[in-house]
Amino acid sequence: MFTGIVEEIGTVKQVHTQQSVRTLEISAKQILEDMHIGDSISVNGACLTVIDFNDSTFSVQVIKGTENKTYLADVQRHSEVNLERAMSGKGRFGGHFVLGHVDELGTISKINETANSKIISIKTSKNILNQMVKQGSITVDGVSLTVFDLHETTFDIHLIPETRKSTILSGKKVGDAVHLETDVLFKYVENIMNNKKSELTEDKLRAFGF
Image (cartoon, rainbow, N blue to C red):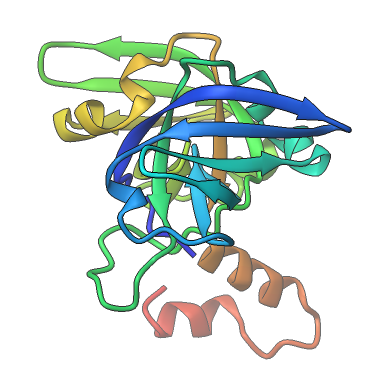
């Protein structure tokens, strides 16, 4: 499990493909400090497993199932990626619950940038939009963000200067793909609501403060 608070930006140094398995070797600094084989690392919001590491790089594998739901098959050498280690029980929980399971690819449809703000509109499916609420949480390329606004086929995120500085989102362009993961708490509630045997109702949820 992750928080959506990116720890550092890494750089893809090598890409190897063998028998439909893609191996990414990524340079990093901070997240290597307490790394172990088998650790889970969020790479642009996709949870991947460390298979090897040294004092300057680590390697993860992307299998076919992951490639089909992400754009990691298109990541090349020198690409920058958002990195986050699995959540520590000793640290503060600064973002929201992120599983690292990409739900869908979104596409950047518009960017409105001024000196002090950057609003990005992302086009996605109705299914994803139905799992979002204004002022709720959404993970975009592994970054925990607030839904700034919702539209019929798109939603908006607002990048503050710190997010632009510490993630790869500032370099995204119109037409670029992004990994999307909706709030897992919303999914649980949606599943319960759709279960006809459940005694949980909309009135009860409002009474509980939802």
